[in-house]
Length: 323
Length: 270
Image (cartoon, rainbow over all chains, first blue to last red; front, side, top):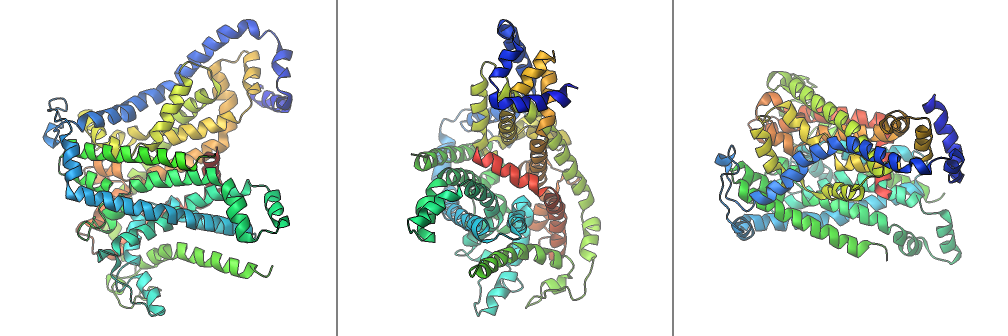
């Protein structure tokens, strides 16, 4: 009974909701007891989260930090507290390691090229769907979003065949227009752009959905006002629509950036970091060090990545937040 | 009206670009090894074979990996639906000390890379005797900051009057949550359920670390290891394997796509 009738009545009452408690009356004297009951209920409801969070997130985050200042290796797995502190040795070792520097460069390359490309394609697709494609809009939306839900590992396996030198799909298509495509993944020059292209292909749908929602939230009158003022389509987009999308651009650039800074599966499956480390990423090199049993070193590398992600996220918020 | 045809042309070309690798995968999975290596490549399989799918059973144990992936994803999804809605409700609707601090903490963990936690997590799980076990695969993912955020946002949108009405009727605080408020979040739960299932199904780094013997592999782990190991040249097997990894989530997404895109938009705009 309670569930069936109360919600409807309350929903109808909610526009003038302030009067409801007054009409109910007698609320003020019970307030203290009610707050206590709320606190008790809140503790019951947050307890599972707090336990899981402490064990599997907070604990490991701090553990990782501690570990990065020790010489912990695989042989210490069963005795994690019987290790020696080594100060900043792991950090110094990581930062002066040429392969790590290469990995950092590659990660920066992937992010600096990949994030803007992803957002431009996503915004283009969103504008196309919002302004141009009225019929079958849902079909296009779902189609563009498909790659986002699929496993990066599977995508990477498929793209290895798409990018294969002679029997691959891409070079066959390029051959139609007379372009002799390279052996993409075996080329030091082309391997990284190939991974970026794949990342854009897989991820733009996610940002597109958010842009689309943002565009649909902009009232028609904004554009009409621009039209009356004689602004062309591009000017209206540049000076009226784009500024209103600022929060959306902030959100998508932050989430895409955080994801791309950690790229791992793509080189793991497609290139194993090669050729000649030209596609190894910080995440992948960290994983390699873990595989070699260098736990202390691996955690210091992960923390360097963590700090970079935090700083870049902070900068993005400063640059793009609403004035 | 004049300009519509080329807008649709761009749109369709985009769809082709998105769909082509998937079609390449499905067609390739029915080709023989010899045909897969042919230059120039064939489009339609010339002598279609189901050998690659047979190999998934005989040369590899894909049914097992499939069941592992499904089991882990279902358990993780159930955990998230229960625990994220509980804390999401508390954060949105109950007044208690430390609520804001707790919410900030949850949000802060959104940007912690999996790389940061996996080494100590591995040490912890190994010492708890859970390495290479289902609990080891499942436990670390039973709640997610994203899920907490999604549920909190949805609960915020529900009117407080409902709770007050319940209190007047003498329903307990937990009863108000479970019997009055939770049933109203069905759309959010659907979104959270789908997204969590997809995320778990595709999860790679942690299963790669923790599943040490073949009988605990999830699909992405098996596919990645086969594609870099001694089967790296068995292209047909890899194509068929990719189909098995991708197809279930594609079907699931197409069935439930409304919930997915809506959820993304909700969390993106708030």
